Length: 82
Image (cartoon, rainbow, N blue to C red; front, side):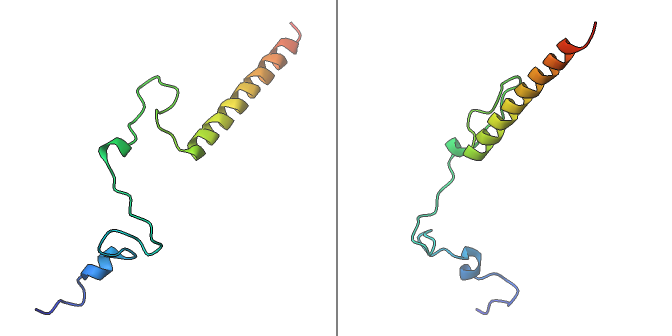
């Protein structure tokens, strides 16, 4: 049976992977599992349970600078004449 030219063939939808779900660099394709899902944080929690290294770095940097800004603001407030 002829396949119309506008439909994807089996090779086109796999892109860079072969029949065994191995990409051409030789690494196995990671399968998603239910435990891999990042759940949304519960209300009021400081940060989600699972966090990437980049997210953790950004979170820690933001927390550090927020704290230093608050300390600077309190020092400025205390130095104002009463």
